Length: 272
Image (tube, rainbow, N blue to C red; front, side, top):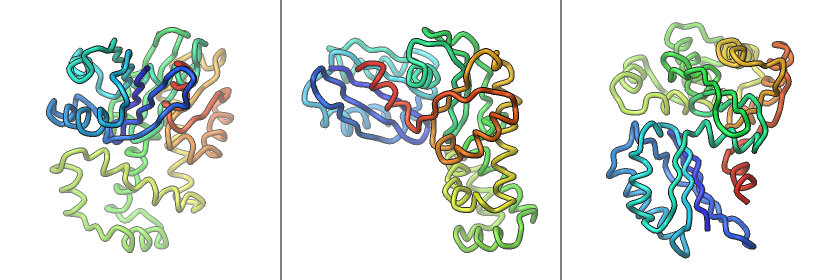
């Protein structure tokens, strides 16, 4: 039995893969060792994951944001002592999910964003994501930041401004507090994604989305050999704005590969 995990900052998707059985899939909070304490991670593993397993797994393959050292592997090994533990970045997980053993350009567009060139085995090149302050173009947090920034500066059209005020009832001090003083500001900014999606046909919102995709492709994907390899995407932003994404890909002379919502779907295929 293999226990698979794809973890972002917001949510972790898990899958139990056993020969001859239908995969079992479930979700927990995101497990990012950069932002989560050891106690928080172990609590999720022991209280939310372990009880859902029929037996100890033979192998645990964890792909996650914030996997920078051996800490996540150590947490998993302490909870699953009989298992072979493999930990790698969420970028590697996304690459294996959409490319399998084939080379290609791979992009994550969710709460945050990232990209790489995958040679069919490993990540061979990676443009640093930068996070929602320094980068993360076209992510939920990035689009939310643009929307909120325009809101506080009075740059949003009247109809969108009215809808924003009615839905969120936020004022300037509250926004500043949530962004600069509360934990996980990127998650707060990404929480405006459903609002953006609901109004995606509005010219102002459509322009925000299109400019975000152009920024992502120009500042990230154009570093790779995009004339030779298809560009693949995983994540909710890629799926929800697929039409705008296709338009941006064509506009920038690129070839679109696969688009999937959750890397766990492709990882089940990869390990199945």
